[in-house]
Image (cartoon, rainbow, N blue to C red; front, side):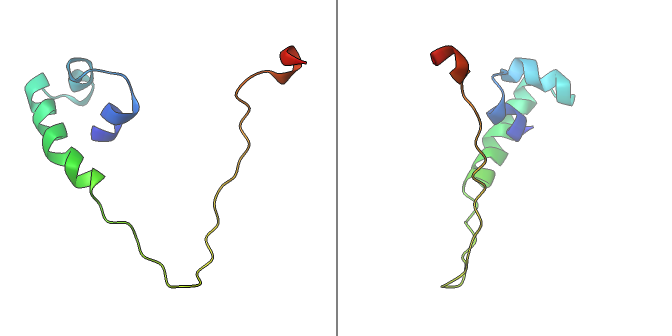
Length: 67
């Protein structure tokens, strides 16, 4: 539920019924669980480790119109 709250523009009043909670219970869940998810330590890698980063090109507008 916390991820859905962060990723969408839904308010707690809209999101709570989707998960079967009251608005106040959803607020408590986000207040309690949100910081636990946000402060998760990053994984450390050994020195010299190669990491692959996804570099997918995603068009943001129609370039044929701009030509």
